[in-house]
Length: 480
Image (cartoon, rainbow, N blue to C red; front, side):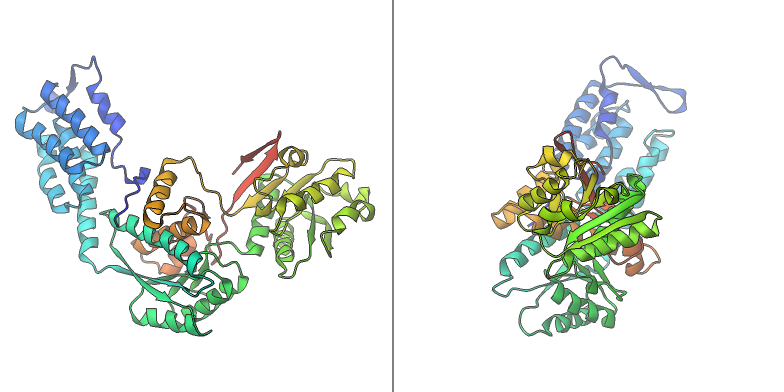
């Protein structure tokens, strides 16, 4: 299945600017060597039809229409535009030799043309694309468990991975990618064994695993074999901790706490902070709180309140045990929730602060996302970080959703979107041409925006990029 997602980056020219050449009332343009190149009705008509076909992805038709301007009309105001667009249509179909044939002699035929730079760039891109296509495909190892308890979510993640590979291979500028899939269900040491197998099979990088335990095993072996491993979903700090070749696209709990602290101190200009969370069996709340405290302290903020509640019921008695004087010492309080009946837990927390009789800013984690208590949370300007936020209205996301449904018969959920985003990021890193190792490229790539995920390792092996939302005036909005 071939999938094309026509993102803005794929657009090789702004068609609106070209259409300005056809605007009513424009009779001629200043041409080369001081001549005046006149408009030609047939050329204008063919150019308009060609642009329409190009935009509709009818590339062979567009190429023919643009070519007819050169063969059926004298040199006119549309001639240089048509030549470049003919070459662009050829490029989009993967005819890179044709691009160079079409543009041969362009600078001689159209000296001083405004499209001379575009023509040179396109010729260079065609040469690079030819070189890319002549190289053997990149090998992407994919490891997922097809055991009974993981088969369905693994398939959802794999669907996103596959669509990302298809979209990458659809772009003729890209070096092709071949997937090598391995099932890691079975014995406990199966994951490490498969990573070693993929390294021997020539994989350039490996992506996969749903859960942290398998990701830790993959990370250990990836370091031994010196092959990049990217975990799309695992949040356990052990996956990347102490590893050079293992990366986590899903921020760890400590990374999330640190990101919220950076936003609080640098973005919201808060300098006196507190933390209240509830102990849980997995220590998630404590890790979020630890990351927040460490980062805020490193940035120079004062931490004037730290309280670990032993159970959720202690929210009811908090106003009896926490003095108003202590509250006056903080600008805001970080109150991360652990997933599970978030609306009820949020109600308990907000009601506890109601009893203090004064409004204080609250900060939170992704569990605070899109809750029904918008008016109540707005009283405290509840501001929180969030690791997943797809733009359901964007054209690109909708096209991805249609492609996902065509492939699976189901709507794309978080696993499908995350599989697409993390794979697209990894393929971009693999495809870049520079002298750095893949490890260094991933660590130092600019912030990257996927369909529902932001990725920026910022020199580390853990993704640091999150979304930030705020409840205000009874509304929820994305503020960064």
